[in-house]
Length: 301
Image 1 (cartoon, rainbow, N blue to C red):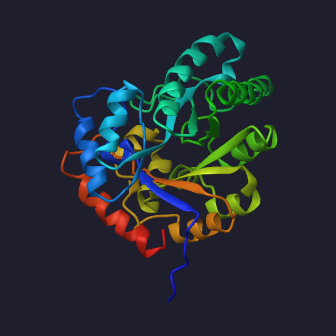
Image 2 (tube, helix red, strand yellow):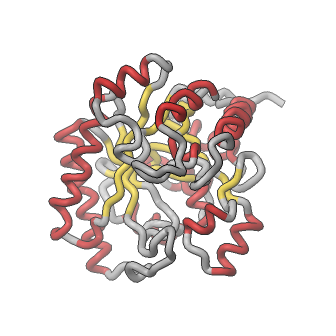
């Protein structure tokens, strides 16, 4: 069988695939080991991960990346814009730090993740899982405002990342958000694992809202463990510890049709591998990363 040439897809990985969720945690892979191993695994592109995990001095980080042949595709921020104008200043202070570093190392995307409605470690309910009409208005208008300012100040485009246990998660929530925001300002980071975790079909979303897809995270879910997670009402953190996010190609969705659908959009897209596995033993990530890169090559990426 001929493997399609996915020449518009630029593959990378992220600290998340090395068990990194926080800027500083003794259970996480040290940043220099992550950089060494992601390069060894054959990924030319990385994300910054949580701000403060990688060096925040642009000159130091640029040097560390260059000597390993690595480039940065995006930075990442968490926001709670549904809470309204009262959180704008604190949100911008955080976003500006990340955006400045992202721009300084040559990346052009900022991945924006909504805040969690329940704590991803303790399962404490922080907010209702459904937004009010007023909160949806705050979220959509606030995201557009953020997109404008990030573009004007730093020249970056934002891509909003639907995520489990946030207010943008299911197909209904994702499509409501997309329909209510300006396509010229707000793109989507489609995370195939989170979307499957929340019951969505990635290929269908790409085919329906293709003009909004600005970035991809490649991830798979173990359907048997997911069924247990749903039955037990587990929050995302404990679900990850149970192994709900699994090594490709053993889970869902099938990634090759996702990549082919993305290729058909006719635009250059980053496809960043993210296999959530916080926490994990230090010797676990590299072999998985090597096998996953080999698998993606077999798909044509």
